[in-house]
Length: 127
Image 1 (cartoon, rainbow, N blue to C red):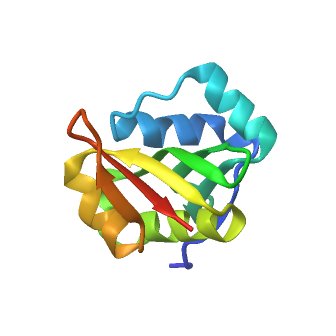
Image 2: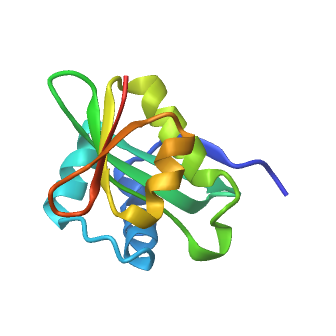
């Protein structure tokens, strides 16, 4: 089996990206996803031409914000999400994300500076 490769997504990847996001129950507006694909701010992790994970980033004045990151259920806990976020961090700094408490350890392990928000969620930033 070949290694997992992270690359910039193209419009041809839209269905695979949508399937990964939907499988993780992450709602990303169709127009937003299309704009992000056109702008080159969607990354995919693939193996043997199958999309295993996806990261959707929204550019900011400085860096980018992670709108969504997801990995296929059967491929979770294999470092794919880490590779996606690390690749995003190589491209865009600072990198920020808002997330639920159950994924806080993931962002902590990646070195994000994490703070709880008023609504009980978290916001992280990697400079």
